[in-house]
Image (cartoon, rainbow, N blue to C red):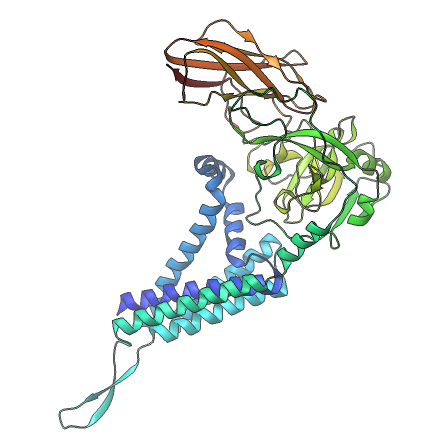
Length: 508
């Protein structure tokens, strides 16, 4: 009996989560209370532990977090179901506590709307109704010794009937979730607005000689579909151009609020810029190069009139994420911009549509705010931001790095003369030379591809003569300041990895 009550709680929990999600999709186009709770768990996790877990699971962090939240909820629902043995209202009390946690998470994440709260209440009601349908004991007629019929409390439906009823509930809940997804207009409306948007931008043309033609080396222009994605948002916010507003305030003479239309009417600047994530390990792929179009941050800040004592800009995303950017990086000669397009098309939603910030020479955690809605001119000693609260350094200049793309680790190549190559970057400083080393021998200078500025990565290539057997290739870069990469390995925390990229492979 108790196991059946537990399973009744699990099915009730699953049905409640499905209907809550369906209502959230249908009413608001949002992602629902599960994602909000998962986000709160992420935000409340101590910084050191959070960093360890993120690096342990890599890009599986968000799916695992959401899946873990769902499983934990279902386990609580299973326990709630068994409480019916003592009192039929005890499971409802647990369900109410789960609903309160959901609303609290929505408030903490800044996602609490009338529609999202309604979604939680619908999920709560579904849990209570389904739990009663599957778990309550039923009066079963039996014949007494004297031949009369009396009603006694039995164990509810037979096992087969229970399983069929539970499966039926899950099927209906699944159909409701699918229907809610189909009715949900928020995300689709923004995607449609993006598709129809026409911007005064170009696609950009890579300079001749940027790609050196070494098989296995990534293209100099990173395709938008392959551009790395790192965001704390468990689901990208859906912000339409018509709803978007940017507030510029703080230590300025003239606070401003701009609509998307007002922004794109301004002078559009376009440039090739390479972005890199501070979580990019030595040899990692959290780096990419694209043609960005947008409005220069320095023009907006000049118009707002920055006070002399300011040294930072606190950026805020539509999902509440924050970062602190050195004011100098937004006002000097680099093309730090509020980007509206990537490779000639409006930003993909997951890359920050309708507006994001891109800043050459800084890691993304202190600069590259997606779904940007707020710029507060201030001082570093007056605020803290999302990642600095979790142990990362306050300022994040990109470190000089290089990577081997060909050959890849563990491959087997033909003996003899073989082309090797990869990429190197030192945004807003530029790469002066790249050297590669085979099997601990002398460093050889690589050929560099052409680049339009110091703000992009550069391809490098060389030729090695390989004997049959195992080999080890290393690479290092020297930037235009004269700094040569150190061989000392350092973790990405707190301000980016260091060390030479090396690969081991074989020839024959």
